[in-house]
Image (cartoon, rainbow, N blue to C red; front, side):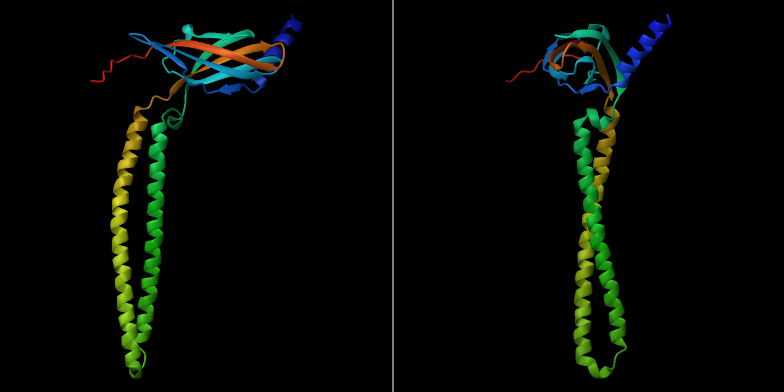
Length: 228
């Protein structure tokens, strides 16, 4: 009994201590029924000699565990399924697109803020120099007049540019609010539950093995579409 226990523990350590082969399959064959669908895919996987753990991840959230069928030219030791919750970004490509748009908008806002800061610093410097110039000797009146014209024109250009930037900022902020709302709305509608199918096999030699998997998904339906 002690010897059997030691062997069993050793087998468990061997099975759970190794890194599994992670596979993210795409449906290759779908048969839709009045209620539900049969989904199938094939994967060619390199196996090492001995025990291998393969995890097919991201399967349909309505997978019927009892319907799973795995075919492979290798000894199957165990087949099991478990429900996992993934990141919304992993299961909904549209969220990634919206997130990228939000990132672009935030970068534009940062760029505008940098420009506004630069204009404000320049205007502050001009105003300080203008005060110094106003305290200079009246004998330099022609030069002072030219400087005053320069200060006025440059500050006017700065103010005009800042006004345009602020308007642009308001527009981008409005787009950011809309994009953020769309992201949150799409995220709330995203079902993040996905099944993982774990298959444990025993290979007699190191080689590539073809796996064929089929299962039923309960929450599927078909709709007729006509081109008129």
